[in-house]
Image (cartoon, rainbow, N blue to C red; front, top):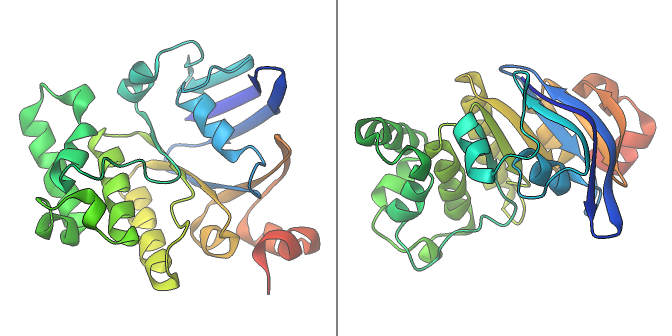
Length: 235
């Protein structure tokens, strides 16, 4: 569904991605593992057109996304939920969620239906829909960030470090929700440092180091790799 073919990405004179080739098939949940600075976020920025790839192709069902505007990529169905949530803390939960529906703003009935789906997934958000997003706990703010992305009606959802800074119980709940989103039919590309939890719900995973894909495999194959286990999985 979403494929990278020999993608490079530069920030000025610095090359952040070196010939990235990967794919997330329709209905898959694929994890990107790697330390801070490995290139996971750069892969997402290239996919969502926030930074234009310097070389290579990024295709959604065969249609090249390189060179398109970010809003066009969202309309095509690739939606990025960034690291750090990037909410508007002074705005209500509801207004933050509805920002995700901007590209579908003329479809009021569709947006109402989608909002009901988000509230069904995150009941706590409906209870606090009129509260300022900045007044929520970290876990609830992550719910808002994921919910806002879902309001854009993604075919492919890019989730960048959704467990960052969350308590273990909230991490478990967050990953359960991500799995539910995937099982409902959305392809998910998940960038995570919490390898143990992420691999448990993934169909496949890629290990990213220094802007390169160095390994690909299933939970069993990667968890059984001694170097990967020591670096990312533990135990």
